[in-house]
Image (tube, rainbow, N blue to C red; front, top):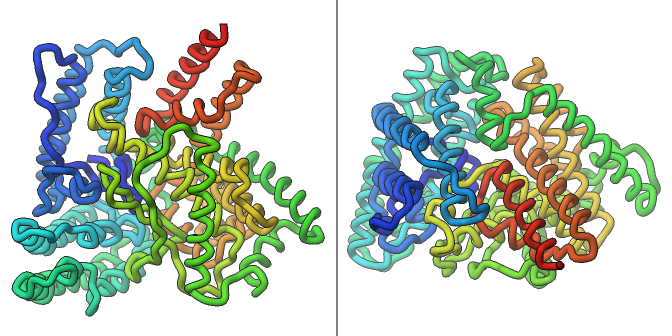
Length: 582
């Protein structure tokens, strides 16, 4: 199982399960459709959170994923058997067809998962970015409790939390025994974060607070007090008293066993194409230089010129550019979201049914500048864009809009909700499987698209766009530097401080993310570069016949396909459009 590849943008993504059964295979079902049905059914049985996150009809809401090492081994045996089946299935020829999409998505998912086994990720997910506490608790914010049966399921799931936590402790202990660990610097804050889940308004108490059923509420509080709180303390104490002393001081993933082989496997998994580390580094340096030129032009025209690095720091420190209150941070984003929604029909023929809301981060997860949590599959429950509102005087207005467009419209929410709402046009897998090269590449492309649509009304907002873009380019430099070139943490912090307008506190958190989650941060810029290349190709070949709405509809119409699949799809669309013009 490969949480980072699946569709939930929670730092670490979650894994599909608990959904309604796939359509039964019939004699007319193609071999790839049959394999996908089998995979989906097994995936549903193995795990149990996606049904809740996407409000999928018929889902069970009474389990947590099987995070035991024995469960992982059994799943890997299934993967090997499915991959052997692919040797007997010919790749479908019709680009964009249901079978073509299913084949490409599932083959890539299985191959990348097998390649990632060299990393043994399950043995060292202990950081502030990758630990279970950064994503599992969110399910209880969505746990359905409307009926007696659903409330019973909620109690069963809550009761499973301690065993899940204990499995995590066991996995990390095994990792230490075998020489695997997260870097110490990325783990030091974990005990505090985990203990912040112990509170009068704990997210684990949420299901009881959303109902008038007094007996149910009392049961929730009893499980929380008697079982979950001790388990949270066990985990925090284990990290504090046992793990930190043995966690590696080295930052590079190469310090783990087989770490040098792990980094290329991670790049292939996240980006969906192989890119050597030295090429990633060079592309990053090139992109940083280009975007600094864009910033300089805007500075010269609107801010009196000066040094780019100094100005990017100034936008986070000058009170004229920061917020006066937490409410002001929130309002800035909600107003911009309204403007973005109104602009979308100019660039898309197809839009999602589901709405999206902006909410402040809960305290235990407030470690980034923003993140998107998916809407429901039927479009009735909105997506949620969580933003950090704390320390408003240290948060620049400049990058608020770029982050919002990345996460909502035209970014993650638009693309992800459309994928969820595909219905029978694609196999169910296309709604849920997700990869960073396409998904994050699309979101970064969306930041630039928002500029085309006039959604950065002030020069400061445009500086924020460039700041976010250069930060993603800097990631290519820093990620490859940290994991393959011996960069120190301070070296990475200094580089990003010079090449981003992000708040200093966010930069510190971001650097720890790159250290603890190797490869993932490279997918944004590499994916966007590929999208821009394909759009430029379409524009040059179609000339005045290029239809922006048609291009975007094609790109988002098949779920989160791989970058090689996207190239095939767009070039096929170009050919179709050329034929229609004749």
